[in-house]
Image (cartoon, rainbow, N blue to C red; front, side, top):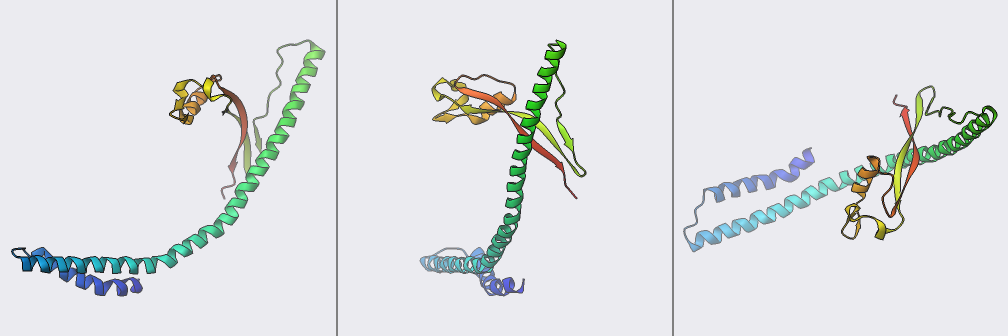
Length: 192
């Protein structure tokens, strides 16, 4: 704090004096104009000095913030990477489980002759301090831009916001697009 004040105080006193002079001054002659222009040039120089002093004081702080953010990012990036990798492993396990469920459902239908049987799908798995929930999110990918209706395009590209809204609202068929379900993992808990 003292460093900031010691850098600013001499300039501030001179600037205050110049500002007071310019505020109270009237320009009635060429000589007055010459004085005002000189004072404005001096104020401009003071502004540059202030900006340079500010940059000198702020630069180490910005570098320190950048260093801190970088150090934390190493850990948070690793966390994100592991969460994503583990989520994929969970989804792989879920696919095997679903194949087993469908096979069992088919086997029971065959044995019993019941055609409308549907075994329940487990949507949530609970652990001691967290839970994993499976949900189906509808996604899309471009198959043929020429076949996509113009209402889903903006000039030169697709209007992804409009497409996402339509898919989110239940659209399952848009010409030129493939709309497909994609499961994701939502992890709750772990906030201690």
